[in-house]
Image (cartoon, rainbow, N blue to C red; front, side):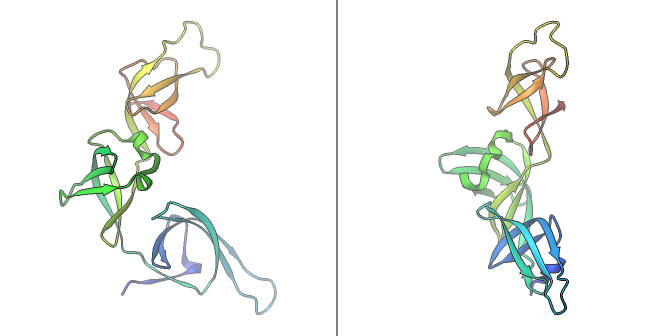
Length: 190
């Protein structure tokens, strides 16, 4: 029997199951009433891990959620085609397939052989979690103009996955750079 979590006990970055679907808590807001006999309410901003949809829902403090049968599996990215993206489980060496909707825009950061964390719910792959930063090679960038250094000047750089970012003038083609996966910003040279 999976452990039950009360709504008042749900914290940020926590996983829980609601209506047989796994959710990830993005934010929690507890409102305690001033009147006697009023009920404490918990407003959760949550992400559905199957559909990736984000929404707010209010629960009573005493509502209970099951702990989801979620598993994080270390996997390496193999390739993508019209049917989806393929990953190799690093423990069982089983090939796991994620649909285009499950992967989302993560392909902008994935190169062949990249190690990522794959989410499994009840034994089936449902999504992935990228690292905070990834290293990618610059395939195209215009040369920086000499003397153009006043302030924080950037130029467009195209990376090996097709992602375009703003990079400092000193970055050249062929260099590896680190990119924040959440904001798509330049993080530094690799």
